[in-house]
Image 1 (cartoon, rainbow, N blue to C red):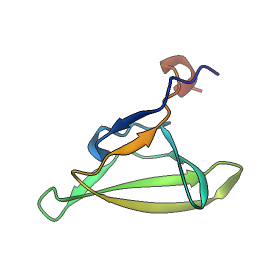
Image 2: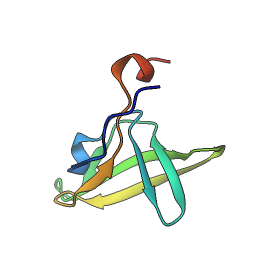
Image 3: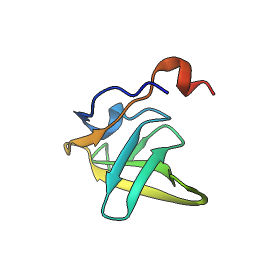
Image 4: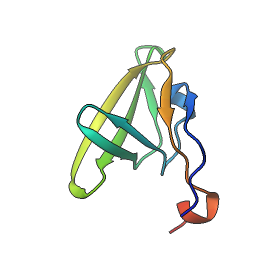
Length: 78
């Protein structure tokens, strides 16, 4: 698996396969993001790494920056 260096992006730039870490652990984006409130809020479904049954819907303000690690395009297809 080839991971790129961590990068900060706005939530609408999240892609399936991106990973991020918060106080609860490491998470993986499992569905493309979508917006609500006239584009002010961004939501994405995530799955906890190491606990595949644990999924959540995460919400960010559209202008926030999220630090993510992206896997190579080849790895993302698996």
